[in-house]
Length: 217
Image (cartoon, rainbow, N blue to C red; front, top):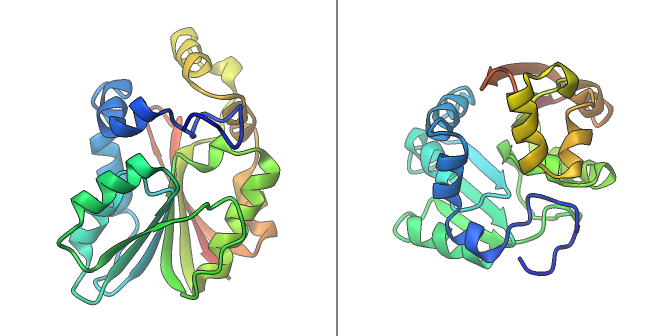
């Protein structure tokens, strides 16, 4: 995007990166992105008939892994506002009626007139100002069935001062200022205040990355 909604955000991508997002992620993670994404999605315990909402779905790479667990009754709805992501998503799933794309902002109140078993968001929420993250969490809560699970795959909570100098240099170089705020917060406490509980977490990449599961109470 040329005109960012949040000028300091790192998740609003320019056209070149959006068109080549999967390749950029592979290179930026030194080839580790594919393996830990696959592992993280395996931890979601996706059932054959699950209805899944993917917030900030991007190219559909994650949805492609999720659909392997679904029956003909399962369904995935992907939300994103990037036209470049939308084009790649639709091309990837043009023959699969279980997968749909909706061009919609996730940082504003949503009313999708549907309830989901699972909601997934991957490396998006850290790129918003903190007050906006609350809107995303409310959207997830309001669209989950009772007992449904919200999965956040993003950075874990860590102290940058305790990172090896090379890791710290890379993080400072590639991440936006909102990410520095994100890693300092207690996300279980925050999610609890919105009505979530029964947390589970799984760590990747030296524990810098976490899949956090939160259940709607």
